[in-house]
Image 1 (tube, rainbow, N blue to C red):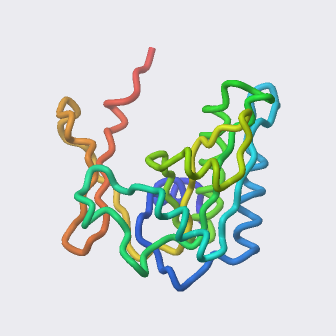
Image 2: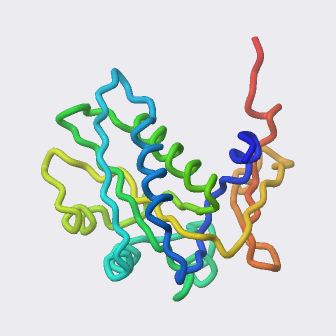
Length: 195
């Protein structure tokens, strides 16, 4: 996929074809992409927990919450729409206490690599991190930053321009009549200042 099209269409996807697992070769590309991400002082403080066994994926899914702007019956994936893969992004504090930028770069690389192969993703911070940390066997020096869900999407997601940047509700995504996501984005003129 051409880079700008890849960036434009790599949206958050929240409904997947649960019968179609992510192939091993795609998973390896996703993980390599995370490994290639830039890292502050090249400390490389992140490690990853891969969950692809269907029963364990369902257990992780039970600790997650989806689409906060939508009512649960619209935003929470239903049976048959769950992801088929989760990757936990883990900060190793003994390597670096400030890992947020590293995590963001790694997650961006992972989700772009996935989307380049047609696999959608959803970053999830709204989860039971204590239960997941226990499930993942994390130590006291490890912090779960995020879990990222992956799968083949069963819906589309489209960007629309925000017309009133002063309206605080203008950023809220919604579903159209076909249950596809409509994602408002601020216009370039509203986010860039030239000096």
